[in-house]
Amino acid sequence: MELLLGDAAAALAALAAAALSLITIVAHITATKMPNLHRHEEEKFFINAEGKKESIPSIHDHPTKELSVVVPSYNEEDRLPLMMDEALDYLEKRQVAMKYCKKYGSDKVRVLTLVKNRGKGGAVKMGVFSSRGEKILMADADGATKFADIEKVEEGLRNLQPWPDQMAIACGSRAHLEQDSITQRSYFRTLLMYGFHFLVWFLCVKEIRDTQCGFKLLTREAASRTFSALHIERWAFDVELLYIAQLLKIPIAEVAVNWTEIDGSKLVPFWSWLQMGRDLLFIRLRYLTGAWRLETSKSN
Image (cartoon, rainbow, N blue to C red; front, side, top):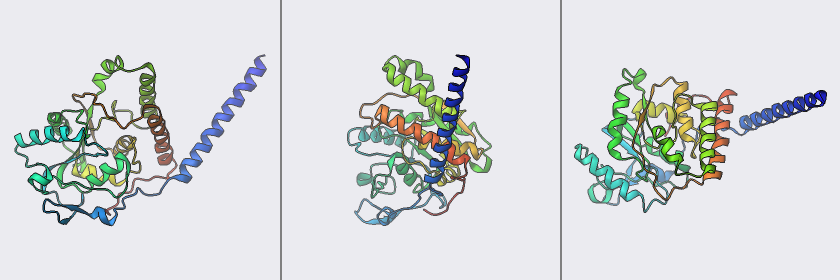
Protein backbone atom coordinates (compact mmCIF):
# COMPACT_ATOMS: atom_id res chain seq x y z
CA MET A 1 0.00 0.00 0.00
CA GLU A 2 2.80 2.44 0.87
CA LEU A 3 4.54 1.69 -2.41
CA LEU A 4 1.38 2.33 -4.38
CA LEU A 5 0.77 5.62 -2.59
CA GLY A 6 4.35 6.65 -3.23
CA ASP A 7 4.01 5.86 -6.92
CA ALA A 8 0.76 7.82 -7.11
CA ALA A 9 2.33 10.85 -5.39
CA ALA A 10 5.32 10.73 -7.74
CA ALA A 11 2.99 10.51 -10.73
CA LEU A 12 0.95 13.50 -9.52
CA ALA A 13 4.11 15.53 -8.92
CA ALA A 14 5.38 14.70 -12.41
CA LEU A 15 1.99 15.64 -13.89
CA ALA A 16 1.97 18.97 -12.02
CA ALA A 17 5.52 19.73 -13.19
CA ALA A 18 4.59 18.90 -16.77
CA ALA A 19 1.48 21.12 -16.56
CA LEU A 20 3.51 24.03 -15.17
CA SER A 21 6.10 23.60 -17.91
CA LEU A 22 3.36 23.61 -20.54
CA ILE A 23 1.75 26.76 -19.06
CA THR A 24 5.15 28.46 -18.97
CA ILE A 25 5.80 27.62 -22.62
CA VAL A 26 2.32 28.86 -23.64
CA ALA A 27 2.79 32.07 -21.62
CA HIS A 28 6.14 32.73 -23.28
CA ILE A 29 5.04 31.92 -26.83
CA THR A 30 1.81 33.96 -26.67
CA ALA A 31 3.44 37.02 -25.07
CA THR A 32 3.75 40.22 -27.06
CA LYS A 33 7.30 41.55 -26.86
CA MET A 34 6.34 45.14 -26.18
CA PRO A 35 3.17 46.70 -24.73
CA ASN A 36 0.67 48.06 -27.19
CA LEU A 37 1.07 51.84 -27.26
CA HIS A 38 -0.54 52.32 -30.68
CA ARG A 39 -2.93 55.24 -30.95
CA HIS A 40 -5.46 55.21 -33.78
CA GLU A 41 -5.61 58.31 -35.95
CA GLU A 42 -8.96 59.27 -34.40
CA GLU A 43 -7.41 58.98 -30.94
CA LYS A 44 -4.77 61.63 -31.58
CA PHE A 45 -7.32 64.42 -31.19
CA PHE A 46 -10.08 65.46 -28.82
CA ILE A 47 -13.09 67.65 -29.52
CA ASN A 48 -12.95 70.98 -27.71
CA ALA A 49 -15.87 73.02 -26.42
CA GLU A 50 -16.23 74.70 -29.84
CA GLY A 51 -16.54 71.32 -31.56
CA LYS A 52 -13.09 71.56 -33.18
CA LYS A 53 -10.29 69.02 -33.13
CA GLU A 54 -7.24 69.65 -30.95
CA SER A 55 -4.11 67.53 -30.72
CA ILE A 56 -3.77 65.46 -27.56
CA PRO A 57 -0.66 66.19 -25.45
CA SER A 58 1.83 63.54 -24.34
CA ILE A 59 3.07 62.29 -20.98
CA HIS A 60 6.57 62.97 -22.34
CA ASP A 61 5.84 66.72 -22.69
CA HIS A 62 6.64 69.14 -19.89
CA PRO A 63 3.70 69.25 -17.44
CA THR A 64 1.46 72.30 -17.69
CA LYS A 65 -0.99 71.42 -14.90
CA GLU A 66 -0.60 70.57 -11.23
CA LEU A 67 -2.87 67.52 -11.43
CA SER A 68 -4.42 65.29 -14.09
CA VAL A 69 -7.33 62.98 -13.20
CA VAL A 70 -7.84 59.91 -15.39
CA VAL A 71 -11.31 58.34 -15.17
CA PRO A 72 -11.89 55.22 -17.29
CA SER A 73 -15.57 54.90 -18.16
CA TYR A 74 -17.57 52.48 -20.29
CA ASN A 75 -21.38 52.65 -20.23
CA GLU A 76 -21.22 54.79 -17.07
CA GLU A 77 -24.10 57.12 -17.87
CA ASP A 78 -25.70 56.57 -14.45
CA ARG A 79 -22.66 56.59 -12.17
CA LEU A 80 -20.24 59.01 -13.86
CA PRO A 81 -22.23 62.25 -13.33
CA LEU A 82 -22.29 61.75 -9.55
CA MET A 83 -18.55 61.13 -9.46
CA MET A 84 -17.82 64.11 -11.75
CA ASP A 85 -20.00 66.47 -9.73
CA GLU A 86 -18.29 65.49 -6.50
CA ALA A 87 -14.78 65.60 -7.96
CA LEU A 88 -15.20 68.95 -9.70
CA ASP A 89 -16.92 70.54 -6.73
CA TYR A 90 -14.05 69.46 -4.50
CA LEU A 91 -11.37 70.61 -6.94
CA GLU A 92 -13.05 73.98 -7.40
CA LYS A 93 -12.89 74.54 -3.64
CA ARG A 94 -9.14 73.89 -3.83
CA GLN A 95 -8.87 76.53 -6.61
CA VAL A 96 -8.11 73.94 -9.26
CA ALA A 97 -9.82 75.06 -12.49
CA MET A 98 -11.81 72.09 -13.76
CA LYS A 99 -15.37 71.93 -15.04
CA TYR A 100 -17.34 69.91 -17.52
CA CYS A 101 -15.96 70.21 -21.03
CA LYS A 102 -19.02 71.57 -22.86
CA LYS A 103 -19.87 74.04 -20.11
CA TYR A 104 -16.46 75.33 -19.10
CA GLY A 105 -14.03 74.53 -21.89
CA SER A 106 -11.73 71.72 -22.96
CA ASP A 107 -8.67 73.17 -21.25
CA LYS A 108 -10.18 71.93 -18.00
CA VAL A 109 -12.01 68.71 -18.93
CA ARG A 110 -11.25 66.58 -21.96
CA VAL A 111 -13.07 63.49 -23.20
CA LEU A 112 -10.83 61.02 -25.04
CA THR A 113 -12.87 58.64 -27.17
CA LEU A 114 -11.25 55.31 -28.07
CA VAL A 115 -11.95 53.68 -31.43
CA LYS A 116 -12.41 50.27 -29.80
CA ASN A 117 -12.81 48.96 -26.28
CA ARG A 118 -9.28 48.46 -24.88
CA GLY A 119 -10.37 47.36 -21.42
CA LYS A 120 -10.06 49.40 -18.25
CA GLY A 121 -6.26 49.21 -18.23
CA GLY A 122 -6.05 50.27 -21.86
CA ALA A 123 -8.35 53.23 -21.26
CA VAL A 124 -6.37 54.37 -18.21
CA LYS A 125 -3.11 54.02 -20.14
CA MET A 126 -4.36 56.22 -22.98
CA GLY A 127 -5.57 58.78 -20.46
CA VAL A 128 -2.23 58.76 -18.64
CA PHE A 129 -0.30 59.24 -21.86
CA SER A 130 -2.50 62.23 -22.67
CA SER A 131 -2.07 63.90 -19.26
CA ARG A 132 -0.56 67.30 -18.55
CA GLY A 133 -0.27 67.11 -14.76
CA GLU A 134 2.83 66.96 -12.56
CA LYS A 135 0.89 64.29 -10.71
CA ILE A 136 -1.66 61.90 -12.19
CA LEU A 137 -4.61 60.47 -10.29
CA MET A 138 -6.50 57.36 -11.35
CA ALA A 139 -10.11 57.47 -10.13
CA ASP A 140 -12.98 55.09 -10.91
CA ALA A 141 -16.11 56.42 -12.55
CA ASP A 142 -18.41 55.02 -9.85
CA GLY A 143 -17.13 57.44 -7.20
CA ALA A 144 -16.79 54.62 -4.64
CA THR A 145 -13.90 56.54 -3.06
CA LYS A 146 -14.75 60.08 -2.01
CA PHE A 147 -12.67 62.53 -4.00
CA ALA A 148 -11.66 64.45 -0.91
CA ASP A 149 -9.48 61.44 -0.06
CA ILE A 150 -7.02 62.77 -2.62
CA GLU A 151 -5.53 64.61 0.36
CA LYS A 152 -4.71 61.26 1.96
CA VAL A 153 -2.88 59.89 -1.10
CA GLU A 154 -1.14 63.24 -1.57
CA GLU A 155 0.15 62.99 1.99
CA GLY A 156 1.21 59.39 1.31
CA LEU A 157 3.15 60.60 -1.71
CA ARG A 158 4.83 63.40 0.26
CA ASN A 159 5.87 60.97 3.00
CA LEU A 160 7.87 58.98 0.45
CA GLN A 161 10.18 61.90 -0.31
CA PRO A 162 12.90 62.17 -1.45
CA TRP A 163 11.58 60.45 -4.57
CA PRO A 164 14.27 58.52 -6.50
CA ASP A 165 14.33 59.87 -10.06
CA GLN A 166 11.15 61.81 -9.21
CA MET A 167 9.19 58.55 -9.04
CA ALA A 168 6.67 57.58 -6.35
CA ILE A 169 3.18 56.04 -6.12
CA ALA A 170 0.48 56.31 -3.44
CA CYS A 171 -2.26 53.65 -3.58
CA GLY A 172 -5.63 54.09 -1.97
CA SER A 173 -6.53 50.98 0.02
CA ARG A 174 -9.71 49.30 1.27
CA ALA A 175 -7.83 46.66 3.25
CA HIS A 176 -8.95 48.18 6.57
CA LEU A 177 -12.58 47.62 5.51
CA GLU A 178 -12.11 43.96 4.57
CA GLN A 179 -13.69 42.40 7.67
CA ASP A 180 -16.81 44.58 7.38
CA SER A 181 -17.19 43.77 3.69
CA ILE A 182 -16.98 40.01 4.33
CA THR A 183 -20.20 40.10 6.36
CA GLN A 184 -22.04 41.53 3.34
CA ARG A 185 -20.70 39.00 0.82
CA SER A 186 -21.60 35.41 0.06
CA TYR A 187 -19.20 32.65 1.09
CA PHE A 188 -18.43 32.07 -2.60
CA ARG A 189 -17.42 35.69 -3.25
CA THR A 190 -15.40 35.74 -0.02
CA LEU A 191 -13.55 32.60 -1.16
CA LEU A 192 -12.85 34.18 -4.55
CA MET A 193 -11.56 37.32 -2.85
CA TYR A 194 -9.17 35.45 -0.59
CA GLY A 195 -8.03 33.28 -3.49
CA PHE A 196 -7.27 36.33 -5.61
CA HIS A 197 -5.42 38.07 -2.77
CA PHE A 198 -3.30 34.96 -2.24
CA LEU A 199 -2.40 34.75 -5.93
CA VAL A 200 -1.47 38.45 -6.01
CA TRP A 201 0.76 37.98 -2.95
CA PHE A 202 2.26 34.67 -4.09
CA LEU A 203 2.93 35.61 -7.71
CA CYS A 204 3.36 39.35 -8.01
CA VAL A 205 2.94 41.97 -5.29
CA LYS A 206 3.78 41.23 -1.66
CA GLU A 207 3.87 44.65 0.01
CA ILE A 208 0.46 46.07 -1.02
CA ARG A 209 -2.63 44.44 0.51
CA ASP A 210 -5.18 46.06 -1.83
CA THR A 211 -3.90 46.30 -5.39
CA GLN A 212 -7.34 46.77 -6.99
CA CYS A 213 -8.55 50.01 -5.43
CA GLY A 214 -8.98 52.38 -8.38
CA PHE A 215 -7.70 55.42 -6.48
CA LYS A 216 -3.96 55.80 -7.18
CA LEU A 217 -1.75 58.88 -7.36
CA LEU A 218 1.50 58.79 -9.34
CA THR A 219 4.21 61.33 -10.03
CA ARG A 220 4.49 62.12 -13.71
CA GLU A 221 7.78 60.25 -14.10
CA ALA A 222 6.46 57.17 -12.28
CA ALA A 223 3.38 57.13 -14.51
CA SER A 224 5.52 57.44 -17.65
CA ARG A 225 7.90 54.62 -16.66
CA THR A 226 5.31 52.14 -15.43
CA PHE A 227 2.63 52.65 -18.07
CA SER A 228 5.24 52.53 -20.85
CA ALA A 229 5.96 48.94 -19.83
CA LEU A 230 2.36 47.90 -19.12
CA HIS A 231 0.99 44.97 -21.14
CA ILE A 232 -2.24 43.98 -19.37
CA GLU A 233 -5.27 45.98 -20.48
CA ARG A 234 -7.96 44.19 -18.49
CA TRP A 235 -8.85 44.17 -14.78
CA ALA A 236 -5.46 42.86 -13.59
CA PHE A 237 -3.56 45.84 -15.00
CA ASP A 238 -3.22 47.32 -11.50
CA VAL A 239 -1.23 44.26 -10.42
CA GLU A 240 1.18 44.48 -13.35
CA LEU A 241 1.53 48.22 -12.74
CA LEU A 242 2.63 47.63 -9.14
CA TYR A 243 4.75 44.63 -10.14
CA ILE A 244 6.63 46.87 -12.60
CA ALA A 245 6.98 49.53 -9.89
CA GLN A 246 8.52 46.94 -7.57
CA LEU A 247 10.99 45.82 -10.23
CA LEU A 248 11.95 49.46 -10.84
CA LYS A 249 12.27 50.00 -7.07
CA ILE A 250 9.74 52.83 -7.14
CA PRO A 251 8.61 53.63 -3.56
CA ILE A 252 4.93 52.82 -2.97
CA ALA A 253 2.68 53.97 -0.13
CA GLU A 254 -0.58 52.22 0.76
CA VAL A 255 -3.07 54.67 2.25
CA ALA A 256 -6.44 53.83 3.81
CA VAL A 257 -9.31 55.60 2.05
CA ASN A 258 -13.07 55.69 2.42
CA TRP A 259 -14.92 53.36 0.08
CA THR A 260 -18.56 52.52 -0.58
CA GLU A 261 -19.72 49.75 -2.90
CA ILE A 262 -21.74 51.26 -5.75
CA ASP A 263 -24.22 49.24 -7.80
CA GLY A 264 -23.51 48.76 -11.50
CA SER A 265 -20.08 47.11 -11.44
CA LYS A 266 -18.95 45.56 -14.75
CA LEU A 267 -17.03 42.88 -12.84
CA VAL A 268 -18.62 39.42 -13.15
CA PRO A 269 -17.38 37.67 -9.97
CA PHE A 270 -16.45 34.18 -11.21
CA TRP A 271 -15.43 34.75 -14.84
CA SER A 272 -13.67 38.08 -14.25
CA TRP A 273 -11.71 36.65 -11.34
CA LEU A 274 -10.85 33.55 -13.37
CA GLN A 275 -9.50 35.83 -16.12
CA MET A 276 -7.56 37.86 -13.55
CA GLY A 277 -6.09 34.67 -12.07
CA ARG A 278 -4.85 33.66 -15.51
CA ASP A 279 -3.39 37.13 -16.07
CA LEU A 280 -1.57 37.02 -12.71
CA LEU A 281 0.08 33.71 -13.61
CA PHE A 282 1.05 35.00 -17.04
CA ILE A 283 2.46 38.25 -15.57
CA ARG A 284 4.85 36.31 -13.36
CA LEU A 285 5.83 33.69 -15.95
CA ARG A 286 6.34 36.17 -18.80
CA TYR A 287 8.64 38.42 -16.78
CA LEU A 288 10.51 35.42 -15.35
CA THR A 289 11.11 33.90 -18.79
CA GLY A 290 12.07 37.22 -20.36
CA ALA A 291 9.08 37.28 -22.72
CA TRP A 292 8.27 40.66 -21.17
CA ARG A 293 11.11 43.03 -20.34
CA LEU A 294 11.21 46.41 -18.68
CA GLU A 295 11.74 48.67 -21.66
CA THR A 296 10.23 52.13 -21.78
CA SER A 297 9.03 53.58 -25.05
CA LYS A 298 8.74 57.26 -25.92
CA SER A 299 6.10 56.65 -28.57
CA ASN A 300 2.52 57.64 -27.88
